[in-house]
View: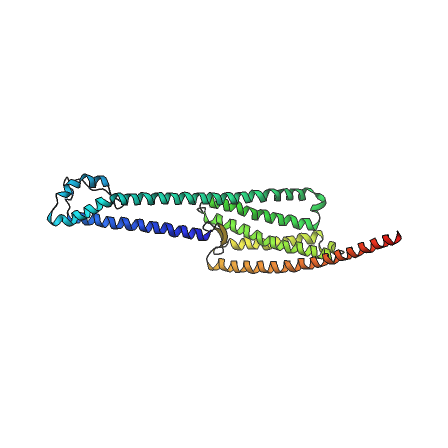
Length: 321
């Protein structure tokens, strides 16, 4: 996407430069003619110049008067003849460039609308099932009181806020990124902060599963109702801290329409936040891999024990028969 935008920018710049060069050279010739002979057009009518383009009708109208020039006017007449012979070509170039610019603008409009539609579709596709799941968990009294489902519920809430990232992207794309800066900054701070909240809750969930597998008799003690609320509260403090930090001037996570994506701004504070984000993500990924590797090992052991017991039971039944 970025490469296409750069190529389009270079093509537009080249067309604009060619157009400016043609108009500049043409205007210079017209001005030189006017300097050589102010009375080039014998009837005294004014010469209309529009962006360096002299109207072909005027040159055609005064063609006969140009033929009357002689002596020192030969140089001016040669330039006038050149202008008259090339005026249609220059006008065609100007018209073609105008149409190309219009086509490029139309293509860009289509691109922006398509990107905005994709973001809106992603938002709708994900938000509906998430809200249904949250509703089911909240309404099921036998689930909402269990620590595991309480953690899942808060993870779902953090995910819902991040899903709104797609809706913000749709709006900012349709607005051509001309929305107030503070709205872009706050939207980025909210969604990025909820990402850190989600990562923290993912660790708590992995720890809950680990304790359930290795210390099943202790899970009720370690994840009591009170302790679970405290741990979840700590996760929210962690995520809220990131939200607050990204609202401070100089630390910005925002939407860039040039790349149709979210990223940190190009300044020192945002660069520091980007490095901290990367470090945090690597830490979360590494620790989660460790947690679930240990859980997988325990599950595999239980699975093997179950197979042994099943085979033993089958053998006993076969012998009795």
